[in-house]
Amino acid sequence: MTFAEYRFLLLSDLYRITRRVSLWSFIRQVFFSSESYRYNFWLRTCQYTKATLALRILLHPFAKLMLRRLTYRWGISIPEGTNIGSGFYICHFGGIVVNGRAVIGKNCNISQGVTLGQANRGRNRGYPRLGDGVYIGPGAKIVGAVTIGNNVAIGANCVVTTDVADDSVVVGIPGRVVSLKGAAEYVNNTDYQSQAIGEIRAL
Image (cartoon, rainbow, N blue to C red; front, side):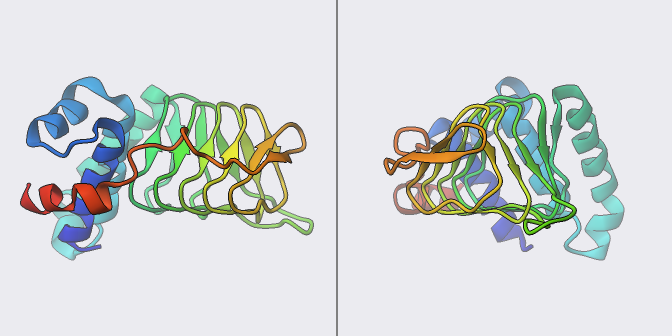
């Protein structure tokens, strides 16, 4: 990961929360007001500080220590090597468990109590893969080699063990598609690539 990529990921995550990329909003979210963004910051920093030998020696141990501290403090367990796209938004902290081999696309929302877990046997053996613009409601579980399409909304306490097509709304145990309205109005502030790109580059 280059510094430019790292910077863009940090600011795209910030934009999802605040719809701005000012220096003050960044400082406020990291140090004062947002538990979820603070976790994102240290997660992204852990990933970036593995980029070169100097960073791995000088900064990575501290970043990893901070991430581990927040993992226990806020109950968010996302391994530093997890493949997560830009604009990642943790809606509320607590009880979040993500397998390190899961893949999360751009502009995804994860709520409290969510699990993206591994299946060790059977036809779904493997890890979840989420598309772009996915909303996962509180308490939902996605287990195994399940592919979630783009613009999908997964309801609270839903259990998903099969693939889900684009624009679906999934509820229940086991999860079933109840509409094709997608994640509209659940996943917001996704236009940073067009509206805020100039600000991000200038910051």
